[in-house]
Image 1: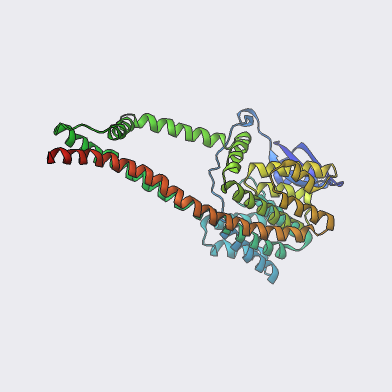
Image 2: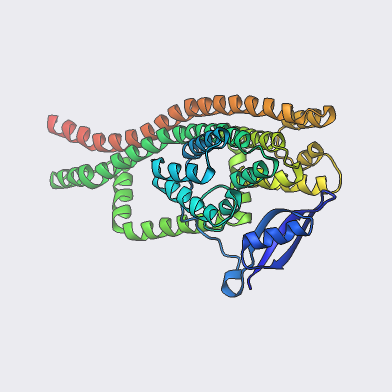
Length: 406
């Protein structure tokens, strides 16, 4: 019988951890519930080679926020209208345009037919659904407010999709400019410069210093192309693996935080995600201590996740959320003050909603400024490279013309 490690909240509201044997995740969850514990995280314990702490690449692509939003909205309507849930899931599986989501809905439909709940199926290891959605659905099922929870999650994933679109849009222009720059450099190095060198050497002319430097770079990159490609490719793979480890993710996000404009903008995104997720969890009646685990999984930022860990430890000791988030040193002073006001006034849910909207607007403005700053910088860098190459080409040509006139 496999061994599972778990984290759960006990009746006193404290986080406990341990291990338990069971047939599968649902069986272990039921055992914990029978013992009066509220499961937060259940994972199958590894053994042998599987226990080695090696970074793993996520091969399965997540379902888009847009598709999740549509799914939650449609399922909410089905639940609210009183249609049989099984029949509703069957219809959704047939009509959903996203093939991966349709396959997942069909899997949920078949498992629910066997007597399992929707949330239990969503929490399976093979599930493509986010754990946050699974936890929220479980809360809705337990409280009888599944339709309201699904409506809230529909709005949540719609906003998540919008912020991801902003990030993607902000990165497209620099990527296009970089590809154009590489294309121009390859053209000059492989087509124009070799012809120029042949022309000048055959005419007995001398190459200027700048031209000789550019030609040297061109010859070096051409001669050792595979070596350079191997080194850069190996470095990219190493960094990719390193940045998937806990220490690597922390190092990467610390570097990003120090980059002007980008670090501040991404911190606004993390703050917005924290506030929005916490708001929807509290609104649905989920205890904040249990909800912090779901918040952590939605941040996609190692420094913000570390701050959540500090907050969880503090809440277990009976300390305030704001004090421990401040101790982590990631969130800005305004966010900490708003957390503190919400706790002191008992209006944390309302304050979190206002925070989410505020930092959503701040991140939007940040991406706009970032794009406005990156655009001229890219033009200057690319212009400098191209200008250097063009000057290196023009100098010997002008030199030849001056010799001919003499």
